[in-house]
Structure formats: C-alpha cells, structure tokens
Length: 295
Image 1 (cartoon, rainbow, N blue to C red):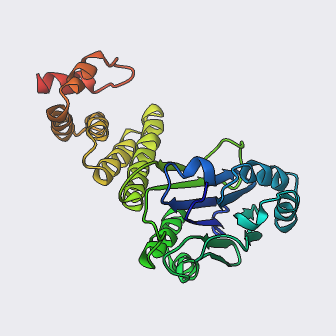
Image 2: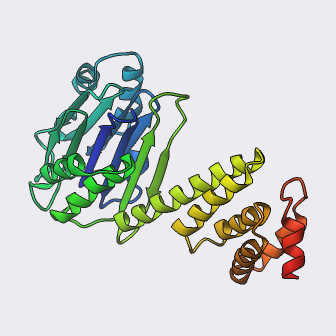
C-alpha cells in the first residue's frame, strides 16, 4: 500500500505531552500510520506502510531503548526498509527518523529538537521544511501546533494526489497506556484538515462540559455553569451542550437564562423535554423548575 503522506511526531516541552498527526490521500490513514502511548512516545509509519512499526517501536521505547536504536533495530529486520518512512519521538523528546531511498519523490524529513516532520509523494520538496517552521512558530495548545504543521504542508501543495483522511493522537506525559488527550480521525473527506480542526474545537467544548459535570457533582454549581457556558459558545450548534448549560445555569440561580437555553435546545430536538421529565432531583435539582417554566 503506497501512501502519499505527511506527518509530524513531537513532544511538547512545556507539558510533556506526546503527539502524532497525519494527513494522506488514502482512506482511514489514522489506524495505519499514527501511534502513541502515554509516557512512552509517538510514532508515524508511512510510505509503503508497515503498521507494526508503531507498536513495536513503542514497546522498545517503553523498555528504555534509545529512539535511534529502537528504530535501527526495526529497520535492520525489515527487507523493505528502502520503501518505509518512519519517525518516532520518546518521552524525553529524542527523535529518530528514516526516509527510505526508494520512497516516491518528493520525499524527505526535517527533525528538530523534540519533533520530526516527514512526507513522501508530495507536490513539492518544501513540505517538510514548511511543516517544521510552522510547528516551531505556532503558539497555543499542543494539538493546535500539530495542526499548524499539517496546514503548512497543504500550503506547499501537500500530497501530489490530493487529500482524503487525517488523524491526530495526543497522549499525556504519564499514566496508563490507554490514556489519550486527543484521539481524532477523519476517515474520508474532501477537506480532512478542515474537518479535523472542527473536531478539535468540538472536543474542547465537550472537555469543558465534562469538567462541568465533575464540578456539578461536587456541588460547585456556579463554576460548573461557567464551564457549560464556555462549552456551548465553542460549539453553538450542539443542542446537547446547550441543554446541559441551561440546567447548570438554572441550578446556579439564573432560572430565566436556564429556561431559555433548554427551550432553544428543545426547539432543535423536542426529545430534550422528554429527558428533562425523567431527570431525578438528585441528578438535576433545577430540572423540575425548568420543566414547569417551559410546559
């Protein structure tokens, strides 16, 4: 399977997070090319892709084998190393990258102190350099900086065949192997990076709502309401977030604002009123007051 693909692996020095992001003109690139494990590392495997590089490299990194040695061992055992493109970063930010001599041009990689950008079958040979510059210059959340690198690749023409799918994984600096801060895939889209950016914003909104749930359960209603409001503003098209933001506002003492939000959610989906009638006072103390105002 020859993939024209560009990707980035990186460690965020500020947070210790590890991440990988990728785009390709190939269906569902994420499960094939993007791998990461909390507190261990991140891997991108592409060109004539061999997905086994992902888990096998991460296992070696978890065993404290240096990044360069880990990748070298895997390449030495691979008779098709000349057509592989693989990059990995470990929990300390050490990077190792390989672009096989038989990868389809334009193919190459640029490695920085804690990241590597790599690409093959590109419209222009400038893609890896542009990605590296964009990532180094970007500010904000780690996932936004990873996305900036992908967008820079598109700015140079990207994959010579076009675009189809994208993925991003970000993992924390420690914790159980399954923990992920971001795990998003765009399987098939005419504009995968546009969709990936939308999903990142939506995830941010739901992360805020999830934190609001925790605060609400702890009786910190005012703080919970603020988080729900922020979530609803990030994703104004989400009637789900609007509904819960309304209940939180009502519970915090602003019944009119709460009722208005729940009513708007119900205009999109009347079943929110059905759910409202089923919520227990323990789960939603203001639910009955909101229901009475609406009905």
